[in-house]
Image (cartoon, rainbow, N blue to C red; front, side, top):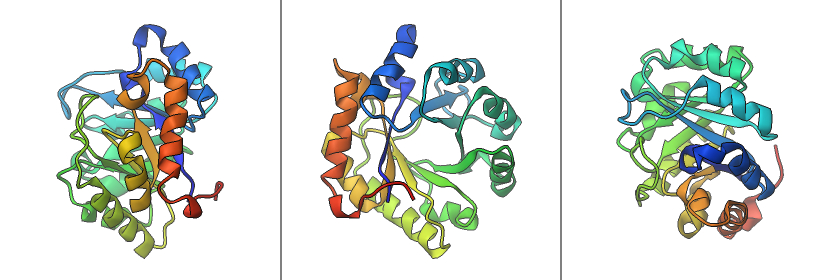
Length: 229
C-alpha cells in the first residue's frame, strides 16, 4: 500500500496558481489533482485543457485530472496531449465505460472510474479488472469546502473488496472533505490516494498543511504502508 497526497487546485488561488502548486510540492505532494467541471454534469464551471498544459510546465509531480463532464470520451486525447498522467471519468456519464477506460489507457495514461456518493460500489464491478484506480467521492461533486460524508469509509471498503476480488491492486482514491481529522479513517478503510483542497489551500501555509495531512493519514495504519509497488 502506497499513501499519496493529492492537493486539489480547486481551492487554490488561481491568480497565483504556479506558486500554489510549488508550495504543496515542497510539502511533499505526490500528485496535483485537477477538477475539470463543465456546468452540465455538475453545476460549477472550472478549468480546462489550457490550465492543465500550463500546470505541466511548472509541476514536477504527475497531474491527476478528474473529468466532471458529460461526454468525457470526446476530450480524452486533448487532456492527454496537455500533460495529464491520470484521467478519471464518472460512471454516471459513461454508458460505454469499458471503451472509455481503454481509450485512456491506449494513450498511455492511468485510467480511473469515479463514483458519486449515491452511486454504489458495485457500479465499477464490470471494470474492476481494468481500472488503474477508482475515485470515491466523499462529497457531492461541484464545489470545494463541502462537509465530508461520514459513510465514505464503508464505500472505500466495498470498492477495495471489488478490486481485490478481481485481483487488481489498483489504489482507491478519495476526494471530498478530507482533512487531518478523518485521514486516518479513510486510509484504514483502504484509501491510498487522498485528495484535499480546503484542508490544504484554506490554510495560511499549504506546504505545512500538506505534510500535516500525510502525518495524520500515516497515523491510521502505519504498519501497512510502504514504498511504491
